[in-house]
Length: 390
Image 1 (tube, rainbow, N blue to C red):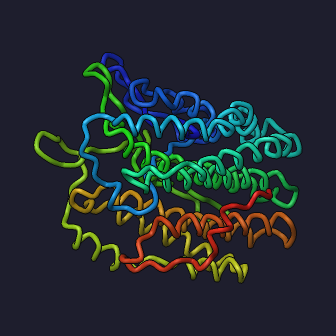
Image 2: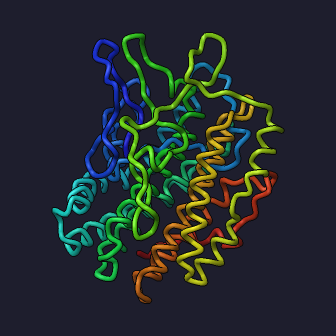
């Protein structure tokens, strides 16, 4: 279940050079490859809500990085059906919520009017999140459950960010909060897709030679995709790519460039450690201290270093491991950015709620980062993920 499909099906007889314009509020990208997302048609309509792509495979990393079956197994198909059923409350709510979110971002809906839409949708998002969390474990690869739960959590946080954006105290930051909601939604989409790709080995395969699929990259680049933070949270970002980046195949025999190269797992791990990423406890400390300046620096560092790391090869035969790590790093970076925005709001309910969103994003990130790569947990309790409030 995703906020939008993210996978584009294009007839080779009518090739499009691009995808969508810089993402925001239209329902760009809602075209779905029937062969790949047929079971998700309802989910996509629902999830189109914030127009994101979710490709995610969260949780641990290595186990979900290799799938040897050629087609989805009967067990995988049955589990996906259960996932779709669990997400149904969110999907149904999105059908109403999406147009209103788009109107709000375009300035066509008053904050008070959109707040009522958020208040109506949020309980349904929470209901879906709780249903996904209760699914039986997918025994062939338990990390699949983690991916879907992480995605569901981030969809709930997306609605909560929009809720803060409707508050009068948020007037000066409304545009940046809307962009943050899109980023969080996009992280949910791509994390969702990581689990989907494990269940269906044909997820990235075109159904026929007449169709070309253009899925987004596993890990987003906020500048290239037109969702980067800007003033007053960050300097004005560079222009978005003319066409959003698409996923490249892994280099190998018969694969023409551009493609993603591979390197030994040990060399890749060494580069991750050498990058010196910020640590989640540092983000939490700055959130608690309401230190906007430090949080802005941490957010920028996560984004820049993740972009640099993604320019390197993937660990050999463990592409999903690198994707999960990148998504975890950006999730922590978004926690820092949300904490920064909260620190710039006046003391009060809106700030408190946004700080809570930032902390919950850190908890999601905790499950995506490998301690063996030198990352520390935030120290926050996982029980925060069960919060039901605004």
